[in-house]
Amino acid sequence: MHIISAIELNSLLQSDDKKPLLLDVREPNEYEYCHIDNSMLMPMQSIPNQLDQLPKDEMIVTICHHGMRSQQVAQFLLDNGFSHVTNLSGGVHAWATSVDNDMPTY
Image (tube, rainbow, N blue to C red):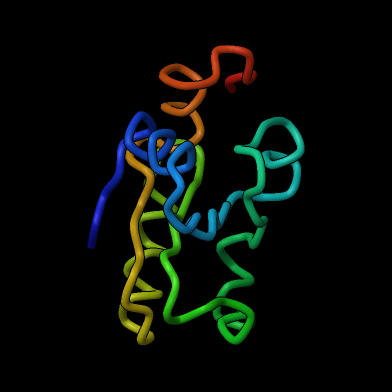
């Protein structure tokens, strides 16, 4: 499984390269409180029933609060035939402290 830091992800999103799908696996109330722009909310428990909504051939970056739930989801995706899966190390908390200081933390 690939891992990306908040700084590396920000650089990737700023580049002219094709943007990855940012898959936020937290709960709706967490997502409402703070999230990375253009991320897609799909709570962890709902993913097995929604695999067909995710692109198997595009880069997916999994995101949660600190990176643990998203790591589990990333492994689940890899186990189910997704080949370009990366986990955001430190989750939205790392994003807030390293990239977007205006983002609230919890």
